[in-house]
Image (cartoon, rainbow, N blue to C red; front, top):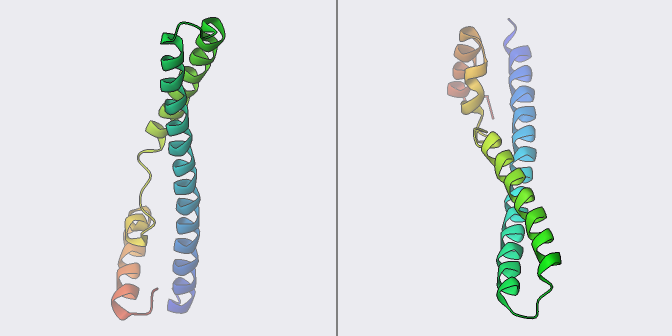
Length: 113
């Protein structure tokens, strides 16, 4: 295989892998932030329910909705927990043995970024 062609493939492949992982990481951060907001709201509703003059029925319904959302976010976070870092060496496993060897040669030669 032509080394320049492989180098172009290698760089583009990992550029795309890194782009996808970066997007996935941003999505995970947004979910964590939303989960924090939901948990804060749940704590606040529980505080309000314990007060004597709070509209308990409406608060309980909102609490049920928030708890369902909390479980949904947490389940999604568990599914995405296996996502790797945006490091090309982490994705090298997806290449064939010959591809891994070529990638290592490129990295040792200092031509790969």
